[in-house]
Length: 134
Image 1: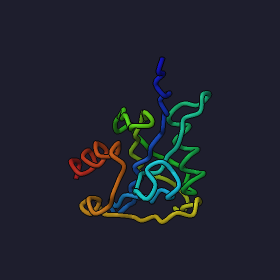
Image 2: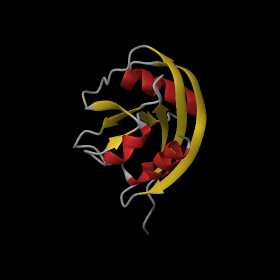
Image 3: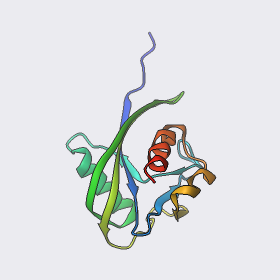
């Protein structure tokens, strides 16, 4: 009997700076969906709320402390090898200077230029929402 892989619950931050640019980073090649650009975030731990996971992940990955964020959307996506549940939040205020602590390339990108980057398929709905809100 074949069992379905467990769903990976991920808190995702669409971080917007004062100029309206969006922060993205490139996944390491050895990771799932490696070489593609993404919005920062990470797995929600069993004992955390999604908001707490978002704040923890953005502090660990990007060196920022979230001061204003609101839910944007929830997306479920099935890849051939795993299923992801993306809890996406729009982060509009934070303290600290953004720096990618995991050593991968990163950029602040104007919304109208996001299409120039390759994102995982699960991120397509996020891109559409961001671009529709401009």
